[in-house]
Length: 400
Ligand code: SF4
Ligand code: SF4
Image (cartoon, rainbow, N blue to C red; front, side, top):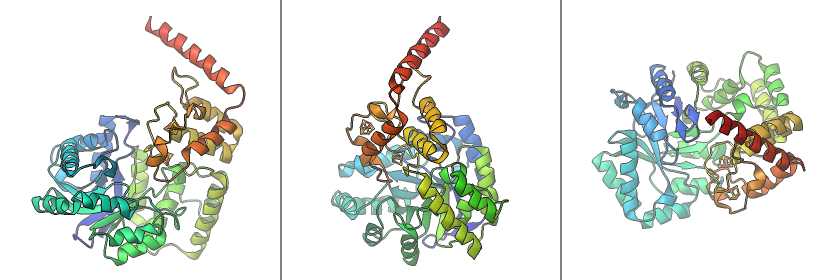
């Protein structure tokens, strides 16, 4: 494992950080045994930075349990407080104590304001007294470093950097988003201010690892057949010394093994001109094949009407990159063809709640209409009704 120094604290951080948003198990039902095994294996392999959030259902508790038995002191924990839940000064205390309780610790090394994407929101928190509160928490040792995670536009990022004396920041960054959100210029600016920069979505929710369109995979293959798509994605970031920790949301031992192997060898400044051209061509192929830039983060969920938003988008993208037949079969499976409950796009009632929570600023309602138009032909609803009746019958027979 390589390590990079946090210039603010002197902490020696592993270049690979563990994002605890996609721990093993289903959404909302984390598999604790598998998570514990994965987290402990990561620590054995040298990972010492673990990132979670108040809003990741069950993630803080799962991480806390996995660290029991003396592991907490060996690693750094990053945890994020959601601004929408901060409506009065007392909410800061309430949320922090809940986070500490869930994690089973009495301090958080890297404390972030979650998805802080404009100065106005920061000013609102300042009016509630957050600056004084941070001072008190730092003096008491409950918070060690304060930062923010960012999904806004390029213009706003430097303003937020200047709005407070931050200790670090966290941005979405990968070879597709080089000039999107904070982007390369934002990374540069934060680094020039002496901040460590934590990178999230290095593989765009796994899509740059296992769902590249065939044309993009062929470009990488031709450039170097011994490098996997995940390795291409991670190497692009570690090539840049300004990136301190790269967070990967790992769910399996295989992903951990692959990522730690790359983290051993991907040195800054090691990418050549030919490889740079391959990245550019792959980015072009990716953009033309993928219609909706959903990273499957799940922040938009749950939908009160049952739409499984990320799954709908995933199947739509599959249809665009691999053909309608494959995409539609995926769509039927993941939106509930063989389950008693349904989750397809046309169930959307356009309440708009999900859009406020999407860090990628996806116009979810409009995109769901496109999904329904392409993936739900005239026979779709009758077919779903038939399979629903069939599944219910099967379930009642099994329970007899
Ligand atoms: S806009 Fe549609 S998909 Fe989004 S939460 Fe409302 S009903 Fe669900
Ligand atoms: S639609 Fe937005 S919030 Fe929902 S999973 Fe995709 S990227 Fe995340």
